[in-house]
Length: 310
Image (cartoon, rainbow, N blue to C red; front, side, top):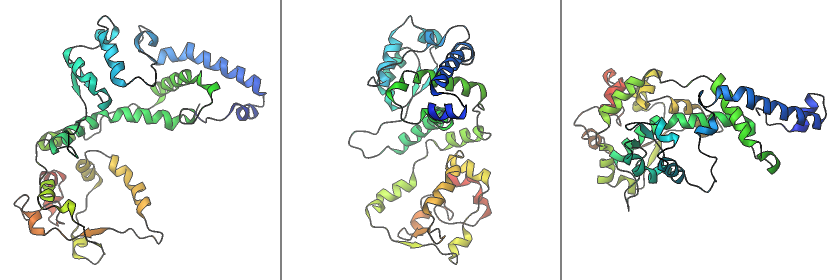
């Protein structure tokens, strides 16, 4: 499962015939499913088959599956969940939001833009980010399956598909047993405080762009040079300050690959500056001489909380 190698290659590694290796593989898979997986996957007091609904046809939408599940009032769904429980879902479940709320569950999902609008409003975007920051654990687990088990990320022949669900269950049990548990970021409480403080703030920069049609003009940029005064005044953040500013480490972890993609063949990394927006207009956004979008050198504004409040 981990290497995704063919049976022929694995048989040669173990110095046995392919038919013998196939028999050993079948016996090992059955042994894991009987003796190992049940103790590492599902609930202790009942089998996974009694709890999990599915598998479902690939053409059946998430919302239809959810609606069919919650319509069974005597099923395990309503036995396990209680009114007031919170469901954090993606937009694929938008048709299930009403039925779930009728049973007393709280439902949160990313916002959908209004008809004839090209993008979300500031309030909608902020609320969507609150959902995303909670749903990332789902994407992390999905990524672990493909990262750790090559068999689950490559194309399969029809002959192998009959065992695919078995391999998936074994992989899930192995992850549950051996993988490091996902825990809250050490700055989680600070993230929540920052979010609650900023959630209702207007996007003054977006208002400035729209008011002056900066998004409809041709922008003029010039390369940033080391001898420019703005470069010397550019604030320097510690790693912790960057994490608080970005509300997490995801963007910071992406910085290395982003740098590699934009690095020039001669080793240069070009940063361009736009000079079309008068500094005075930017300052007027907050009525202050110091503003995030103006390069500033005062030590006081290096505090991420101060920067995010301007």
